[in-house]
Amino acid sequence: MPVHKVHPDISVLNDSLEAPGIGHLPVNAFVLHASQPVVIDTGLGLPDRNFLEVLGSVLDPADVRWI
Image 1 (tube, one colour):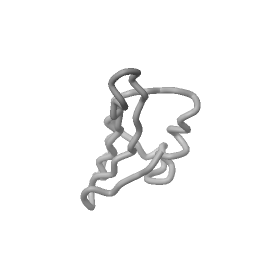
Image 2: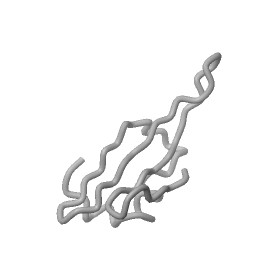
Image 3: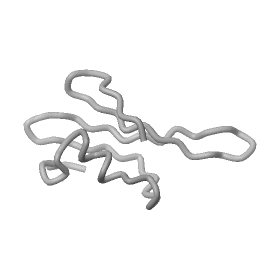
Image 4: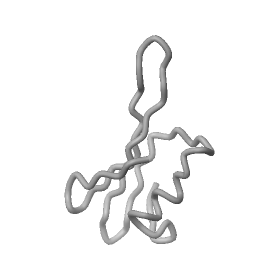
Protein backbone atom coordinates (compact mmCIF):
# COMPACT_ATOMS: atom_id res chain seq x y z
CA MET A 1 0.00 0.00 0.00
CA PRO A 2 1.77 3.18 -1.14
CA VAL A 3 1.87 6.23 1.12
CA HIS A 4 1.80 9.77 -0.28
CA LYS A 5 2.44 12.97 1.63
CA VAL A 6 0.02 15.41 -0.05
CA HIS A 7 0.61 18.21 2.45
CA PRO A 8 3.00 18.56 5.39
CA ASP A 9 0.08 17.69 7.69
CA ILE A 10 -1.68 15.05 5.54
CA SER A 11 -0.61 11.56 4.50
CA VAL A 12 -2.64 9.32 2.19
CA LEU A 13 -2.47 5.55 2.50
CA ASN A 14 -3.39 4.65 -1.06
CA ASP A 15 -5.27 1.44 -1.80
CA SER A 16 -7.76 0.13 -4.32
CA LEU A 17 -10.07 -2.80 -4.81
CA GLU A 18 -10.68 -4.49 -8.14
CA ALA A 19 -14.25 -3.95 -9.33
CA PRO A 20 -14.90 -6.46 -12.13
CA GLY A 21 -16.15 -4.79 -15.27
CA ILE A 22 -15.34 -1.34 -13.93
CA GLY A 23 -11.63 -1.38 -13.10
CA HIS A 24 -10.32 -0.37 -9.71
CA LEU A 25 -12.17 1.42 -6.95
CA PRO A 26 -9.86 3.74 -4.99
CA VAL A 27 -10.18 3.22 -1.24
CA ASN A 28 -7.83 5.49 0.67
CA ALA A 29 -7.16 6.29 4.30
CA PHE A 30 -5.99 9.72 5.38
CA VAL A 31 -3.81 10.66 8.34
CA LEU A 32 -4.10 14.21 9.62
CA HIS A 33 -0.94 15.05 11.55
CA ALA A 34 -2.09 17.37 14.33
CA SER A 35 -1.73 17.79 18.07
CA GLN A 36 -4.43 15.08 18.28
CA PRO A 37 -3.76 12.93 15.18
CA VAL A 38 -6.76 11.79 13.13
CA VAL A 39 -7.15 8.75 10.88
CA ILE A 40 -9.92 8.91 8.29
CA ASP A 41 -10.32 5.36 7.10
CA THR A 42 -12.67 4.70 4.19
CA GLY A 43 -12.38 1.08 5.11
CA LEU A 44 -11.33 -1.96 3.15
CA GLY A 45 -10.25 -3.72 6.30
CA LEU A 46 -8.91 -6.72 4.41
CA PRO A 47 -6.35 -8.82 6.31
CA ASP A 48 -3.85 -8.91 3.43
CA ARG A 49 -3.56 -5.11 3.32
CA ASN A 50 -1.29 -4.75 6.40
CA PHE A 51 -3.06 -1.52 7.32
CA LEU A 52 -1.58 -1.15 10.81
CA GLU A 53 1.92 -1.80 9.50
CA VAL A 54 1.51 0.86 6.80
CA LEU A 55 -0.07 3.28 9.29
CA GLY A 56 2.92 2.65 11.57
CA SER A 57 5.24 3.87 8.81
CA VAL A 58 3.52 7.27 8.99
CA LEU A 59 2.57 7.56 12.65
CA ASP A 60 2.68 5.45 15.80
CA PRO A 61 -0.84 3.96 15.94
CA ALA A 62 -0.85 4.53 19.73
CA ASP A 63 -0.70 8.29 19.04
CA VAL A 64 -4.01 8.30 17.10
CA ARG A 65 -6.66 10.21 19.03
CA TRP A 66 -9.55 10.28 16.54
CA ILE A 67 -10.76 7.82 13.92
